[in-house]
Length: 251
Image (cartoon, rainbow, N blue to C red; front, side, top):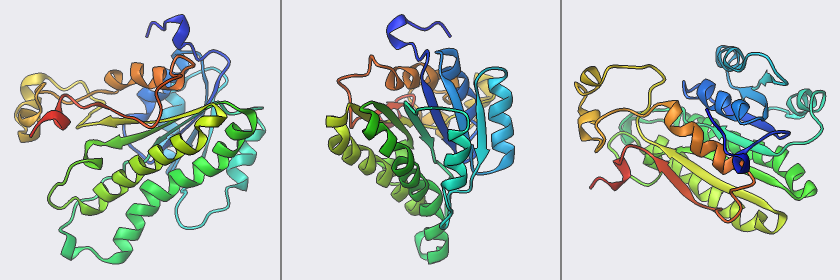
């Protein structure tokens, strides 16, 4: 991916968290191609391996951490500190999906969804945001679903976590702006990392409902992610920016 000089991430260190979505390898590659060293945090080992494989050679590393319940982040932060001297970028992709009628959900399922998708990001923002505040620089990008601002049948638990992430994004943008930290949300619609032919995609009802009549792909998101993580993103903060094929514009 060609990178404009003002969007370069050369010399920057990025922490990328993934809860297991298939966008993560493409997002990690976009950061690395822009020049960043990437430290991957993944909820499961399979996701960690997939992202590190996609990154290939370079000053990249990672660690597995469930970030659910009440884990001690000392081990995770220690693994980071053994490799890097500073943190410039934090990208969190916490979009574990869950669908069930509201009255059928038990509180344990509700709590698990919020632990995975919201509490995990709060923990990372505390651990690495503190360092950004101390060094007077940082870029934080929280990936969210279009369901952060839309209601959908059977999606109450997932949507609530995404709305919480958007609210967290806006609040941290206001609180940390004076520390030269920009905090934004990158919203997506229905995506796939596979190159599925358009005629096959359009057999699905949601694709036909999407104005651009196709699913998104990580390569649609990568360039905007790089911008939001760069020094060029200096006057945009607290904003949700959607790359969703027009879903959020749809009535």
